[in-house]
Length: 408
Image (cartoon, rainbow, N blue to C red; front, side):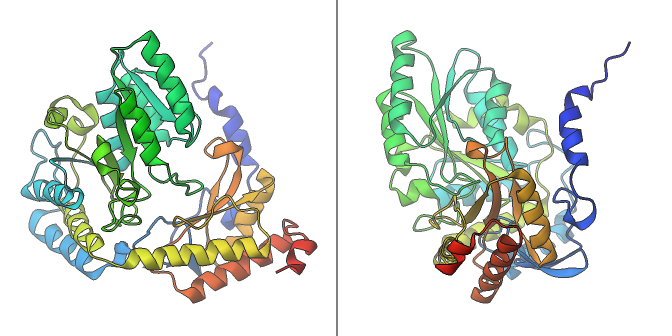
C-alpha cells in the first residue's frame, strides 16, 4: 500500500475545512484593486488596509514608481539568471552601494527575498560544528536557516539577556572554542516589541559570539536615519550582521545583509540561496534604491509612530486586551478563542477594514491575534474609522464587556 504523502497534513486540512466560506475566510482573501498604500477594493467594496507592513507608504511613491518604470523599459522584465552568473547588473551593484551608504558598512549583499537573506546568511555562517542561539520568538526564516545549516540550535527566553548569558556560559564551559552566532530581531513582528540590543550585544561579546540582528520590521521606522533598532539604541558598532527586507518599509521585494566583517565577500561564493536563485528584476532594484534614498531623508517616522500610538491607545481605551504598547508600527489585540478570532476577522472585513489574523503556532504564547500594521500614509480619520469598527465588532462578538465600555 502506498503511503499518502499528504496524510501528515490532515489535521491542518480539517481545520481549514471548518473555516467559513466566501468573503469571511481570511486565507482566501484577494485584493481586487489597490487604490493607495492604505486602501483597496476587497470583495467589491473599498477597504482600509491595516495589515500590509507598508510602513513608509513607499508602494505608491512617485519617485520610486518612476525609477521602476524606467528600469522596466530600459532593462526588461527580469535577469533570467543568478547573481553568480548573468544576473548581476550594474543596478544590483548600485543597490548594494546604496545599502552600504545607508548603513555605513563596508559590505552589502542583496538577496531575492528577505526570507532567503535569513536562510542564506544563517545557514552559511553556522554549520554542523557551530552553535546558534536564537530568541524563542524568532521568525520562521530564522528557524529554517538554522535547520538548513545543521548547526546546534539553542533557544533562549524572549528578550532575556540574563537567560542568554546563562546559556552561553554553559556552552563555553563545554565547548570554549566553538563558533557561536546569536540571532535576534530588532522588532518582533507579531507583538511589535523591541529587543534590548544593548544588553544582548554585550552578553554576546562577553562570550566571544557573533551577533546577527534581523531589522525587517524596524528599517525605516527607528533610528535617526531609519537604520533600525541598532541605530536607535546606539549599538551598531557591536552588531556583526544586519539582515533586512525590502518588502516592508522599502515597499517592494528582496532582502539583504550588511556587515563590516573583512571576509564577508566570500559569502557570495558559498551561500546557496544567493548562488542558486534568479536575481531581482531591474524594476525592483531601481525602486528599492530610490526608496532607500528617500527613507534616509524623511520625517515620516514621526507620523508613523504617532499613528501607531493613536491606534494602540484607542484600542486599549475601548477595553481590548492589547499585546502591544504603541512603540512600534504594530497594534495587536489578544482574542481569547481561535474561533472568535476568525469570526472577528470576518466581521472586520465586512466593515471595510483589512487586518491580519495571526494564530498559533505562528504567535508567541499561543495568542490568537488581530494584528494591525500601520503606515505613515494612514490619516487620523482612517484610524478613527478603524477604532469605530473594532469597537462595533468587539461588542457584537462579546469580547468587550459592558463594564469595560462604560469606562471609555
